[in-house]
Amino acid sequence: MQSMLTLISWGPDGWLDDIAYGVFITISLAAATLPVGLAIGFFVALAKQSDEPSLRLAGNIYTTIFRGLPELLTLFLVYYGVQIGLQSLVQLADPTATVEVNSFVSGMVALGVVFSSYASEVFLSAFRAIPRGQYEGGYAIGLTSFQTMRLVVLPQLVRIALPGLANLWLILLKDTALVSAIGLSDILRQTGIAARVTREPFLFFGLACLIYLVLAIISSFGIHAVERSVSRSEAKR
Image (cartoon, rainbow, N blue to C red):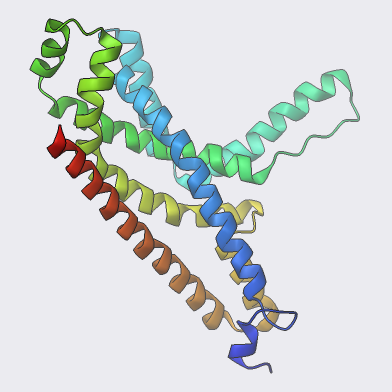
């Protein structure tokens, strides 16, 4: 039996190359999902506080669905559902054609909609924490609605929403492990393969735990740096 140090080394006898690739996929997926989830969540929050009843209803339905479904089930619905839908459309033109949906894109979409449903609640709470007088003050000095949002509301919104969004980022980082179920070579899938081949599950799953903890710690340092930067910017304003 190979030694543990050999198993977690670089090169043909070790698995660190494959696990490092899994780390790259995990970080890439989380980084690609974050802006998608933030953008959708922001607009859903705007819809939920709109004066238009249909927009409020649509926003509430959206968040109810994607906060109510398990993340893994959402992932399966996106991965298999989109594939079946595209397959049906393509076969209308060519009955012999086949369609394969990219697992990375499916994971990004599924995690993005789940992230956005929770992010919308964070944004909505932040919007409600900003006094209406801030909007009225912007209008009083001649700013348009867009300028008031960009120059007056958004800086305060970011500061208020940041702690909640930081927690959601850490949750997103862990939820990327779910994409191993659709064949994406993330940390969990790569360590799982190594565990089965070498019959050393404790070693490799323990290594996966350590990697996720290191990523969470690095993220925490990054979050604190962003919070300090936002606080300094707010103090200058």
